[in-house]
Length: 64
Image 1: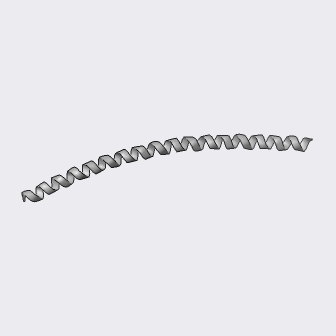
Image 2: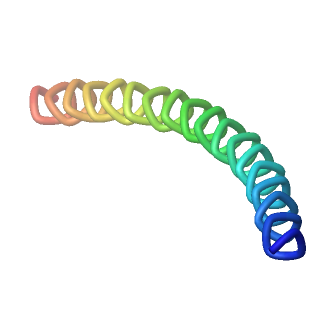
Image 3: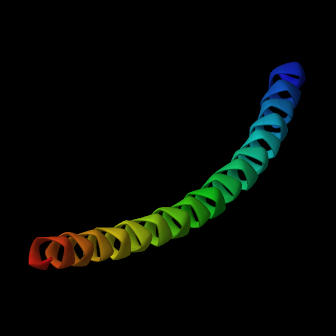
């Protein structure tokens, strides 16, 4: 009976440690996702700006 109890305690300790490690990994992944979202947003803004400049240039060429 004591051996079973000791094993349950040990398993709980292992699971608690693994959960802590997973929480750290999830936090790191969430931070990376936020950073990548910021980069994507910046690229989208650059794309919009370039498309606007292209439209203006095409309009100026048509007017020549």
